Image (cartoon, rainbow, N blue to C red):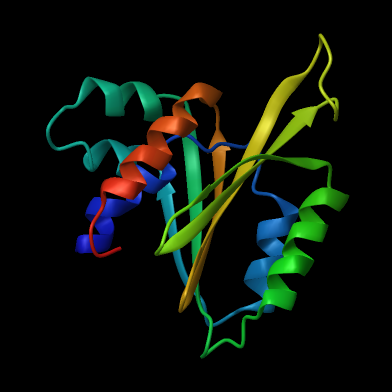
Length: 163
């Protein structure tokens, strides 16, 4: 239940046009990982307080996939993390931001069309991961949202106790 309260805070501003091949590969590599799928309708149900900011942030979301990997049980190592970073780079994702705290590191990658930006560039998506001591979270989102909301995401994640 606690996860359901925290999850929207993690997932709000990260969006892609289609589930990335990176996430599909990660899911296949770790079939025992905990997986959650959220669709627009289920995200609306989580907005029990009718928060207009929350509504605005999820307005253009189609779906979100979260993968939680237990590092010990699934043998997820720093080498696996480096391979994930390489795969993101190989697929033209660019590192957008990194936020570090005592409990976890958050890294956000952005995918633009065409890669490298330019006048005609559109954001195709985001890929976010959180690296904690015992668990690793990968989040892939389908939809769109203002990139400036990522700072809000990081601030809210830092406020959450016990995650």
